[in-house]
Image (cartoon, rainbow, N blue to C red; front, side, top):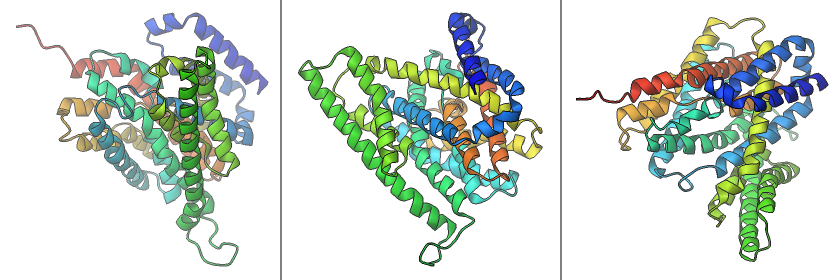
Length: 408
């Protein structure tokens, strides 16, 4: 563990010194840190599985996800649901559920032996988008602004929306071996899972909404009376996801769902027009945590890929990165005012990143030995595939789709 921490610190320091040079050579942050993680993973292979399965690793992953979900929820530009709320609603309420269902059905075909719970976990891992592998997409002016805004809104909310489903799937995976409760009454596995996950989700939503609203109201009042400094406001935003996570877990709720709801409530009720500036410290902390997750993922990929990739798993991952997203998005945005080219690009530009890694690591900690390595393998192949497809290959697709018209 100490060796890995020192190695991570050295890699971060080295990257910071030459970050602009990496950008010029199109060596994205995920490529650099995954590569470094692989090198460390090769030298610590024997202890890697034990480290990933440690309870402390699980808690750390949950807290990191809480912070990143809060950042996502507060980072949406152009209003709570962006500048095109109807299209955003179609993406989150139609395309996202369709993609989840598509992934489960595809998994039932290509990943034999997987239970419904595990297939649902895999869907939660492969569907949410995150622009860490290809952050340049949201800054690329060749892509129409409304497409970039829609992608930003979707990335801000989809992992938070998937989180309660993921919690249910984890509970379902853990309850399938039992059937009776303490009174002897029969419970199906889904019933037991729902009985466990639903109260957690309700507690998380109540705690997140209450804390987000309270912190927004108190910060509005304090700013009007000149009681806060710019630094104290930044610190408050760092503490908010940690506080909501801790209170929710203390009340037996889900920490990262609470942090996500807290971010939405704070974003909606905060009166200052300088929220994006106030989020700078939290953004930097979130970015640093993301670097650590990519490094850990690189190390974990050594373990996941040790025995190769079966062709069925590879085909599932390829389709998860393409058809599972593109088809539902094109269908959901039909009639939204986006032409076919824009709909196709919204579907195509869906990189997978930190949420997939965290969900994968949490699943690895919960599942039994028969499924944990297969889920870790799917996570690894999907995320690595996205780094290549979206991080390296996206400029060519944008150039092909939005090629300037020839001069007359």
